[in-house]
Image (cartoon, rainbow, N blue to C red; front, top):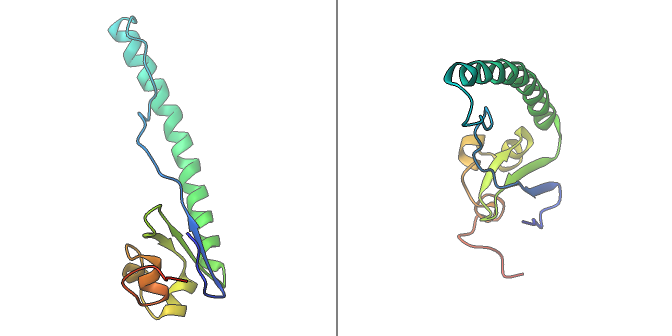
Amino acid sequence: MACCLEGVTVMQGPEISGKNPIGEIEEDLPHAAKLERVKGKLNKNKSTEDGIDSSFVMWEATFHAIKDAVMVGNSHSTITRANLATSLLFGKSLEEVIGQSCWQVVHGTSGPSKD
């Protein structure tokens, strides 16, 4: 996804698919062993989750501190994230920007530019 407006960066984000958060548990284990394995994985995931939460907060603060407008979109040109500079530049709240196509926000058109 590209944008022709100076000072605006539009990036295509990755497609995200779901994954079992505790991973695979061997089917041939006795029930009690499976429970212990799941408990161990959940505890490990909890500490990993806490680290991810902290990293996300730092990433989000950095993202919103960028002075240029930055939008992240999917393969359909739908904006999935935008920073505060985007909101200021286009005079729209982030809630109004997210979910719109980049051409709706940037150009105010109903479709991509012919250029």
